[in-house]
Image (cartoon, rainbow, N blue to C red; front, side, top):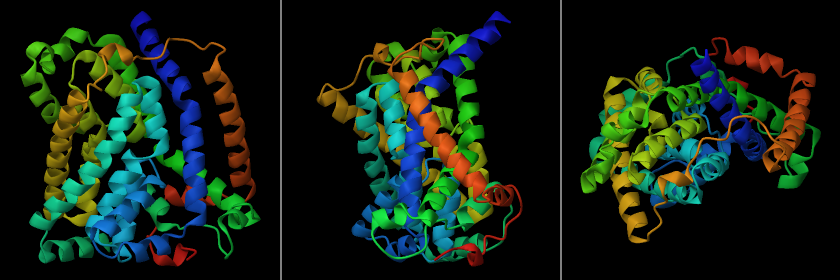
Length: 385
């Protein structure tokens, strides 16, 4: 019971320390999504030129931070005419280049990891785009498009099918502060939490259990901590593999990244692990259902190679610049709650969340949650373009 209590205490402390960052991050994402129609995004993503990929990355950064939702959104964009590579760039950015992830990395691991995250993201997207030019053939793309058009029930399908942006013309602020704008922000905010809460709690529970029960000696042996150059080479290779079997996605894998970093994985290895949220086993199965086995194999190999290569590049650059922090800079939060800036920020964030949830409920948003749990057809008839 003491061991279980220790693990749950660590889980609760981690959740409390990152709560305000999550709420403010999702609120900002909801604001942006509420005033940008998905149809406008699709029109901008019709090819895989460098400028288009940059636009896809920007749209992704302003979108969801849930891995499952980002995969579904990318499929929705692809079905509506977006280029496949551009849709993948959007997917990578929407789960790994979002503000709440950067804030949580800074809180738990240090600003160097936040800097590395926003440097590594564009590098991965470039490598993925280059590799797709080599491995993707029109036959595979056509088969993937045909598979993507098939109806598939699932909670994320409802989320991907709906364009919850505010109707009407006018400036950003006029649309945002209109009644429809406020409702759209509340809808997106609640949908994002509905999409991520299970994975977030799962990630925190896994990190709490591992932090409390797994001895450092295990990780030190797995990551070859005292092997110098060999450890730096091994880290980016093993990092994504640990991620694949962790079943933890998006911001939920940051607490586990803390455990791995303090356990001895290399700097490049922990960065490769963080990006592996798009390769966890449940998502690989979703790729298979969305695009077929041939495309899933290509996505898996391309993403893995890009993560490993980026891990090496980040390790080299940060080592040369002497920016690799000491492992002691990362920490699991102290157990318990005390009156400090985190508590005050959490109170403000919870008030904001309460207001948005209240707006969502009063405007009949519960029917949207029912749709996410049902078997929608993912048809375009439900959009507000």
